[in-house]
Every structure is written in structure tokens, then in C-alpha cells.
Length: 222
Image (cartoon, rainbow, N blue to C red; front, side, top):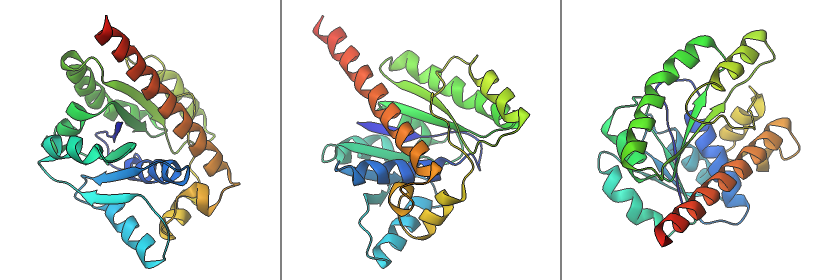
């Protein structure tokens, strides 16, 4: 199962979500690989911090322009592979991730400009879906605050051609504190609201991908 965390806008929380989702699935006993395709190398740096602190963490590798050819082969040895994509949506790396993923997750921040920035990402996902109908897409409202603008953004996202995740992720310091410790938030602060939200999103994503794979198998069998 390959899950790409993608999107056009920097600061939407792609790497943070990729790391914490992968860490939660690994903590649950799954074999998890993080593919760091972002030149900023946030996921790779996090794994190095985890190593320094002696903390168990998912296997993490950096992959560049050869992502489309490399990731499916790497993924064979794991239950879940999470691809932390770069910020430019139409880069070779991000397109390669969409061409081999089972699901692409598009985090969206809580402001109107975040929704505007999401448009190109959605267009590319829909374009790839015309070639690979099995590719699932999911928008995640991320870094949510309790403002009227955030509520309006959630309403706007519900009108877009890709589904909006039921689980929303708040703007919570527990996420950054866990990263600094080289841990996932569900391990570093297991009773926090951040951990509760992250677990909910992890369950929702796995259920969605599993349902998509079952549907694809039925169509193939027919």
C-alpha cells in the first residue's frame, strides 16, 4: 500500500502528517517505509533525530527523480509506504508518486488562500485518475483553528471533486514537540488531542485504501 502526501503549497503540513502517520502505523505493528522525496529532507532529518535518541521508527530513505521506478520495488517489503512529496505539484517526483500510489492525501490549511492553492493539486490528481482510475484522493483539513474562516474553508473543501476526510487535524504544539524528540505524536503524547486526531485520520486512511483495493479486485475479477 503506497500513500503519497502531496500538495502545491508550502506550509500545509505535508511532512508533519507523513511522519506522524507513518510513526503511528509503525507503532501499531505494521512494516512501514517513509520515502523522503522532498529536497528539504524533513522526514530524513526526523529519522536521524530518532536514531540519536534511540527511538524506534519507520525505515526512512531518500529518493529523487527515479521515484516512479524505485518506490514500487521498495514497497514490496513493507505493509505501508508513505511518500513525503516536494512542494511543487508538477515536479517529476510528485508526478511519479501519483503514478504509483494507491492514495494521495492533500493537506489543506485553514485559510482561503490555502483552498486556492489546492486547485492545481486537485487538477493534477484528477488528470492522473483518468490514466489510473484506481488512484484514490483525499483532502485533509490540517492545522485547523477555531475561527470562522476555518469553518468556511471546511465548507468550501466539501464542494471540491475529491472527498474531504471526516477527521480534521488541529494546529497543536504536540506535533512539533514530538518531531523534535524524534517520535510520533501518538507515542510522545498519547493522551493528547493531537494523538487522538492523528489516530482517527490513520484509521480513516487505511479503511479508505482497503475499500479501494477491494473494489479494484472485484473489477479485475469480473
